[in-house]
Image (cartoon, rainbow, N blue to C red):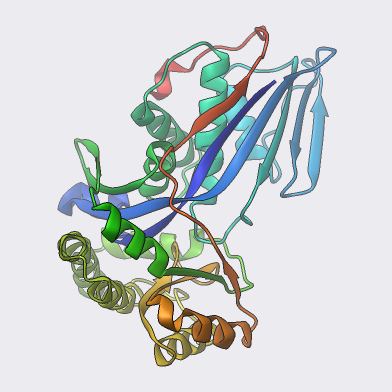
Amino acid sequence: MLIARAPFRISFAGGGTDLPSYFSDCGGMVVSSTISKYFYVMLKPTTDEALEITSADFGTSERRTKQEGLSLEGEMGYLKLILQEFGLREGISVFTASEVLPGTGLGSSSTVAVALIKALSTLCGHHVTKSHVANMASGIEIGKLQRPIGLQDQYASSYGGLNVMRFSESGVEVDQVNLSLEVQEKFEKSIMLFFTGESRDAATILKEQTQSSVDKKPRVMESLHGIKQSAEELLKAFKSGDIRIVGEIIHNSWEMKKRLAGGVSNPVIDEAYELALKLGADGGKIAGAGGGGYLLLICDPLHQEKVTEGLSSLGFKRMTFHFDHGGAQVLVNSMPPISGINFPKSLV
């Protein structure tokens, strides 16, 4: 058996500047942290030559013989493509499960890729760096599947921790944000996450944003420049230790983000956010591309009970967590060799 996991992330500032349509010309910058919610992959050998894939999140399972081959259609097509890249056609059972619903703005699709690539690379006996895992995941999502997404999720999940990521044509740089223990604890305790009750497909929003960036629409480009600047301001605020300023920066960034594409916010989200501000939150944003998923708030612990009660009355559910510092990891590995598996060097 081999068990691997990869953490989900919350992005505080800079989201949207990690899309190639923007950073290829202007450079991008994102500040984010991974949290103690994970996507798990469990691999086991099968007793015959079949290949089995089960997703607890989608409630689906598929079993194929080598002769039948893998179909890349359906909800598990993404998983099957990764298996195919590693040359797997038989002799293995893959079980996946997540602590977070798909499509909720915490980087779920990329976290899936990172966890499975980490597991399969280990099964190959191939040592891969955190950068290699992230690069392989983005190569499959963006290169193979042509998904209109950015690069922050793959790198955040692979590296783990509170990081600043810089994106350019020459590559991705990931640097840990070094905070004093006091400031880190203060910051972590100030963050609240509420599930809006709605999941969404980010593709529609990101396609519109990507096209607007390609077309150099002034409104969108001005907003993206401002969002990138907010990431710089956030790093300065961390050094000061003033969490209230952090909330204000994230609030201003959220106001700019809503100008990137239609559907980033909606009346339900707006109502909940305005209520949270009235009850004491310093600022916040919808995690990910927008349109649903999780509402992230920065709020003094003194006001959090009131905010929780207020948003609960609207049907929002709070999710508690801690920061994750480990990134993608293999937790258990007692797997025997599997025939046919090959490390896809072309993706590194």
